[in-house]
Amino acid sequence: MRALLVDQSRDRATLVAARCLARAGHTVATGACKPSFASTSRYVNRHHEVRECEEDEDGFVADIASAVAAGGYEIVFCSYDVGLLTLSRRREEIGPAVWPYAPYPVVQRAFDKLELPRAARAAGLSAPRTEAAEEAAVAAWSGPAVVKARTHVPKRFDTALFASAADGRELIEQIRGEGGEPLLQEVLAGTMGAVVLVAGQGGEVAAEIHQEAVHTWPPGAGDTVLGRIVEPDPELSRGVRALVAELGWFGLVQVEFMRDADGVANITDFNGRFYGSMALAAGAGANLPAIWAEQALGLDSRLPTPARTGAGFQWLNRDLAASWARGPRAFAGAMAAAPSCAHSMWDARDPGPALRYLPAELARRGYGRLRGG
Image (cartoon, rainbow, N blue to C red; front, side):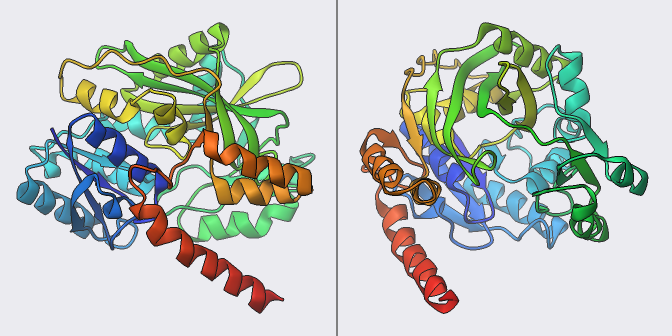
């Protein structure tokens, strides 16, 4: 199988996917507006220049179609929402390559952050209160609020937490002014986690893992910067499977939740693409990109290896930032965790991306701190 992986050049999850697909015996190429993290991997055979979808949708689709013709790719993946939704809508234009998703209306609904809480509740799950950020809703809202966009179209928008909905008016108007639909969402507290599934063509589940965040950055929300595989929660598994079936989803999805003090898991995100902590599944023995690709192409999919409970993942520089705020002992603990964890960027069998990126990133951050000082 020949696969083309498209991103915005700085997506760590695409790098993880490239390694997973190549190690399963597939030929991998990348596409982005400039050489990407993934394109520097020893597992990637070729890079294609692909215009940025947010800036030139027609050029983006045309570039991918040209790459498919030039490289003979059988399947195309995209790692960011704007490009993914565009390709779902215009999938016929990149043929004969397979676009590994359900029909566009399914993808559009699954990525709709106002629709997701409704679908989650219909599947018997809990979800945070979420409303369109109209003036009446802003005025009536009580307590802190998360301001986010309903979808990341026509571009990726910022998400931020505010002490009140009124405090978030500037971001609300910015999202609206740039063509998005702003939402207000209830602020949750607890432990962040996720159920990750690969749904097959007939709705069957081809693979499933459960994970929890040990540390996040920013604290209490944001990204998983230290995470681990946990034993599956049967009740949560049933609910997430019902949600996936209710949406009619096909392929990979990471369903994120926040588990409160009473043990209730509130569904917060439906990430139907390669996701930030995917190196955790890969490091635990679950090659989710390969399973997804083989399902999409109708191949005899490998039996998934059960993910090793307790296996860890770390986004090192952000975990160090999260730990620094808790003091020297926590910082030392983050350093000590690094050798036993899977990482998105660092891989001893493929050191090139980390060696090309990390020194420059450290220099950039150091220069920024000196200027700030």
